[in-house]
Length: 57
Image (cartoon, rainbow, N blue to C red; front, top):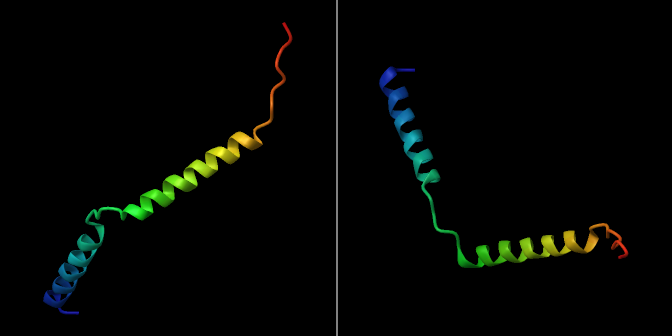
């Protein structure tokens, strides 16, 4: 492959990769969904945690 063509392809691909990695704001419903599932996960962990006996006084 000719070096100029290789360099041009490299620059084009680098531009594509940079465009893919630019930060984008998360959609509002996505944040709400993640928060909801996190709360469900925490609730399930609390509900299934083995109970420790309360020491008698």
